[in-house]
Image (cartoon, rainbow, N blue to C red; front, side):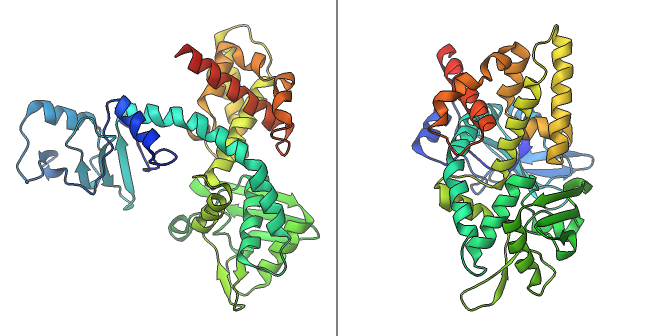
Amino acid sequence: MLREGKDEGLVDRTADVAAAIAEEGLRYVSDATPGYRRRRKGTSFTYHDKDGKRITDATVVRRIKSIGIPPAYEFVWICPSPNGHIQATGLDARGRKQYRYHPKWRELREQNKYEHIMQFAAALPALRARVVSDMKLDGLPREKVLATIVSLLEKTLIRVGNAEYAEKNKSYGLTTMRRKHVAIGRGVLRFDFTGKSGKQWKLQVEDRRITAIVKRCAEIPGHELFKYLDDDGASRTVDSGEVNGYIKDITGQDFSAKDFRTWAGTVLAALALSEFKKYDSQAEAKRNVVAAIEKVAKQLGNTPAICRKSYVHPEILTAYMSGDLIKMIDAKIAQKFKRQYAKLTSDEIMVLAFLHKRLRALKSEA
């Protein structure tokens, strides 16, 4: 069965990606090109080709039905080719575009995610250095406020925020947060707000520089918390796109605010599992994985299912179940990475070293 999600693709659409797609026997497709359409007929559907003619070929109809397009989707586009990396798109009940992918494309993206998260970790030292530098800028320019938001992304693991969710669901993230959602004290911020899926967030950050900047933002008239002053002295709000653009500009790579949460979830899960040490049975190992995921999910503000699926690298769990994680998460192994990634924490270096070693092992087995 195909799975849905946003059309995030791989890191970029380079020749390497195209070659990888071709190697898997897939075609890179777009729903901007003509495709098959779905029409409701009573309680079922009929399918029509690019010319509007009804499709009666049993094999084609069976393939379309196997995609598993929800009945509620509207404006459905179906890929004419069984090898298209996107098999179908449609709008859900909220008008959001959803994608159904070919299973091989999902596998390819998972493989790429392995290297993507390592690339993000490798880029963190330079990104952190730039954030510190921008937070020291005079006044309240855009870069200073964006740097402060990125710093809070790391310290709190709060989502970056989405204007649509804020408007429709009254759920907030950093860029959509209101002044009423934070109490500002001496060198401390106390956040209290409703996040995605109705999750209530209550946490505090003790950092004098961040607090001073947030205080200045809050003093600018307006309900929004994060605002900056442009070259003409006019106040401007920020959105998630600007934060992601800031991250991309500094790193020169296709990273986003979500990568902070994915990297943090991966590190936290590895550390939580390493605390269990050895186990006597697979049943005990599974219980340990469940406990570790629940712990990380609480820190990220996710359900355990979403945390496991989207915020913890799968090889962390696979390696733990096989008994390899405990052997490979080792401070000694991490020593050779210490000079190269001096600005990472010791825990981050250990996890990054594990991922490097694990990737080499998997490639040698291939």
